[in-house]
Amino acid sequence: MRTMINMNEIQQAVAILRSGGLVAFPTETVYGLGADANNAEAVAKVFAAKGRPHDHPLIVHIASVAHLSDWAAEVPETALKLAKAFWPGPLTMVFRKKAQVLSCVTGGQETVAIRVPAHEMASALLQAFGGGLVAPSANQFTHVSPTSAAAVNEELAGKVDLVLEGGECRVGVESTIVDMTSDVPVVLRPGMITVDQIQQVLGQPVLRLQPKSDIRVPGQHIVHYAPRTKTVVMASHVLHQMQGNVAFMVLSDFVSTNKVVKMSSSPDEYARELYRVLRELDKLGFEKIVVEAVPSGIAWDAIRDRLKKASGEA
Ligand code: TXA
Ligand code: MG
Image (cartoon, rainbow, N blue to C red):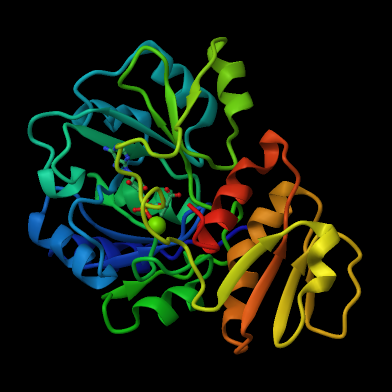
């Protein structure tokens, strides 16, 4: 489905951003809470609206790879290869930052995370704006990320100057983040662009962040992306042991008199539905959301990661 881009609305959004306001906009992963990455006051409003701790760095979104040198001090050849393969798209890369990049954006670190989103409304906005936009997921800190404009309104009503309507997000979980500052790239956050795909483009192995690293990626130390309803991930053969006021999110043909949501066995479709389903179940007042464990293959890495975070295990 193609979204109709209303250029008047884009111009209105640009005017808000230029005057230091907040605009939530769709990306192909999740909706972002956008602000001018060169305006410290605007960036401060993002942290305030989300209730996000200040040492959690933000991703700078740019219109195309041509803008990369405005933010990154060094761009290795490997990064250009990944950019060529995956941008615009659900990949974020971390670089050494240029001196002028605001430290409120990078959480005081010497590195900056950059992404070129693929959603056509995000592209239109970034092109019209011209500069970089910080855009964390447009949810309250620790809540489930929004994959529709309606979900953004639930999270941030009254705290954002404009919410651009761009339909349901096509990917559904946040971008893959790869640290490009060392010789061997490190995947800091799994996403729907997999480790396999990255290794294939680079023709070299990459590392995956081990838990307990001191690199600051939310979710490593705190409950993140979590519904308010207690959420547990369980193996298929013990699902039937769960009883009472619980809802099930399953892959198998599990039968129960309780509420059961059957998810797709395609990881791409599962990812697209994941946050919407968690958000809907969260509203229904269950005591628990019981999620059937997903397969162990690399294609499911991002989903397994978000389910772990939803259940407070990561
Ligand atoms: O798909 C996405 O990436 C979405 C859409 C809106 O673009 N954005 C998103 O932003 O997920 P946020 O703020 O919810 O997550 C940003 C992640 C955090 O985990 C943060 O720690 C990490 O990026 N990050 C940002 N700058 C970093 C840096 N310099 N080094 C390491 N991690 C960084
Ligand atoms: Mg987030």
